[in-house]
Structure formats: structure tokens, C-alpha cells
Length: 317
Image 1 (spheres, rainbow, N blue to C red):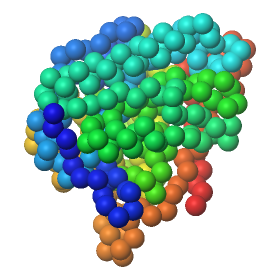
Image 2 (image 1 turned 180 degrees about the vertical axis):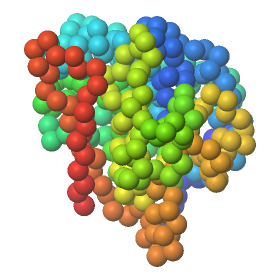
Image 3 (image 1 turned 135 degrees about the horizontal axis):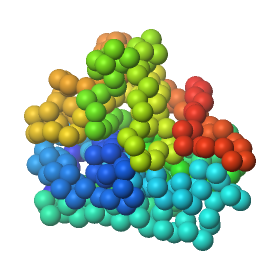
Image 4 (image 1 turned 90 degrees about the horizontal axis):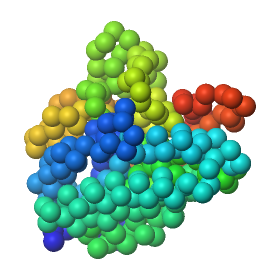
């Protein structure tokens, strides 16, 4: 089976491009557990055809869509312990692993070696609101020139026992001493971050983010991890590290558009952090400072509807 990219030598640093495949692309978020098999195969085919042309190794992160969010709500994972149904957590974890395995199988049919990682085994949400990611397994997968497939979903939490984690936050938890993230690409079911005027925001920064439209979720859908708001906050936090992010549609993804988004000059979507990368590369300092992204869900109140958690972000050097 084909490998991918090159591991950076000298400091044990892996140069990676992170591709987040939104759950809205590969599941029907209005129907519990509904997986869009054709879309998984379509996106996996684009990645498989072009993997050898990408100049870094690839980490894939899947969104949970109707597989993860419905289960999290039904089991009250967003409420934490003691409100959640501990006896059912295995169903949520198993369903998310099956989704990742399904994507890995589609890549395998295209001669790409990929391996799903179980989030409960290596990600822990800390009491201070940060994320600890134990990366040994991830490093081994990359060292074997395989494609790791991660996701958000069910994770343990030091303060609340368990919680649902948004996969958009995972790149922020990667240790910059081990992983040099060249770019993060977030594939969604919309053309980018939409402004209040209905147009796609091309350049995302703190000012333009304030003009983001508040989109209502599709009737019947459930989101317990923050949706587009978290994508935007994650992209801005990555930009502060000097890591560029592309938020674009994966609905009609072709080879040229894919390569432009992950390793070229993106022609579509919303871009964050690209100007800072150019400026920092000129000065010879790109992405050397670690920024800790801190998020916090409000503590659930009795009878409260907790579908849309809020996030708090801080920076530390």
C-alpha cells in the first residue's frame, strides 16, 4: 500500500496537513446514525488520488454528524457525570469508531493505508478547559507512513467525567515540538464562513468574524459541540500560531480544488492566517510559539437546553 509524504528529519518533527471532514458531509444530520456512504467514498477517492502529490503527511479528522451528536444528546454526554448514561457510552464510542473505520476502508480500497484512532484512548479534557492529547500512537501511525483518522466525540473530562469534543479543536492540541502543521483544511457543507450579508467571508480575522451570520441548524438536526462558531474560533486560534486554515465546501470537491486547498493557493472558501504566515516566513519565524486553546462549556442547569455550548479561549506562551 502507498505511503505518503516525508517525515521531517533532525528533530523528530512531523510536517503535517490536517484535513477535517465535517460530519454534515458524510452523514445526514437530521437522521440519527445516517451515514452517507457515497460521500465517504467520493471524498476518500479525492484524497486517495492526490495523496502522493501532497508535500506533507496527512492527518484526517472526521466530524461526528448524526452518528455522534444524536448519541451524545440521548446519553446526556453534554451534561457530564452524574447526568449522563454511563451504561450507554460504549455505543457512542463504538459508532464513532465504526465511522472512522468506514472511511479507512474506503481509503484501503484505493491502496492507501489508514488507521482509525479511538478518541477515548488518547484525548482528555482537562479541568482548566484545555485538551491533553497523548500522541504516541499518532506518531507511530505517521512513522509507518499511514494516514491516521481521528475524530471528536466522547472523551474523558477531569472535571465532569465525560464530554463531547469538537474535532475542530484537535489541531490545537498537537504539540508543536512534534508536529509542524503546514495547514488545516476544514471541509464543510457550506462554501465557507457566511457573513451577515449572505456572502462568503474570504479573509477571516477578528473583525470579519464579528460579521458572521448566525445560521439556524437544519430542522431535526442536533449539534452539541458548537458548529461553525467553533470552526471560526479554532481557525483564529490557529492563525495566532501562524498556522493557516481553509474553511471550504467539500460537496463538489474535485482534484484541482482539493490540491489548491490543502497544498496550494486556495481558490474558494474562507481563509484564516495566510497573511500572518507570509509575514512570519519573511522574518524566518513560522509557528514556533505554542498557543493553548482553552474552551469551557457552561455548567448545565436543571432542565436547561444545552444544545449550543459556548467556548472560552485564552492564549498562553
